[in-house]
Image 1 (cartoon, rainbow, N blue to C red):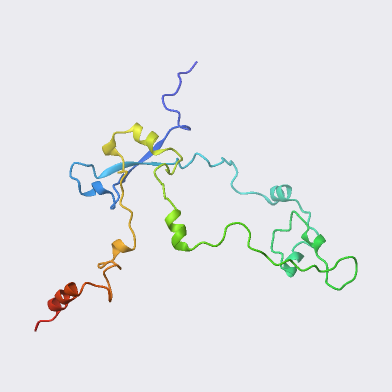
Image 2 (tube, rainbow, N blue to C red):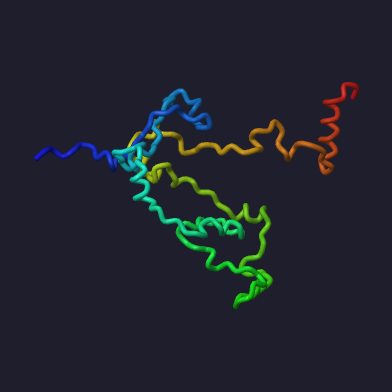
Length: 196
């Protein structure tokens, strides 16, 4: 009986050695390494193995069949753009005023149900973003961090970049501010005016 394998490649956690991110707080730390291990999913884990890449016409006929309905694709003329190869949507279509038992019923007016509309500012205040438990391969950060020493992994505390961080002068300070303290305004005007 052969020995059991040391590493189970199907269930193993895969890491790649990558450069530390620019927004990582430890990028300027001389004691921290420049390269870190980042978890990734293995490239060939979910790919089905196909021995034959090119399919013959006979194989395609067996797979898809040659049965095509007479009215297949006709539903698009009536505004129904679903794939109608599996289901005949035309059986529900009738011409208005063409007789028969079909008659037009107008849709009732929609009334407000459920939650009322909410302003964007209120919705953003209620949202809490928690990305701590997410990782690319589905493993939690705790299990990833328990495998290797702390200095070999990317930092947990990465500063999020926002629009305000990219501006030289934040929006709160930029532009005309009529409610600015008059003493501060006088000082700012004095700095710009050489004759003051």
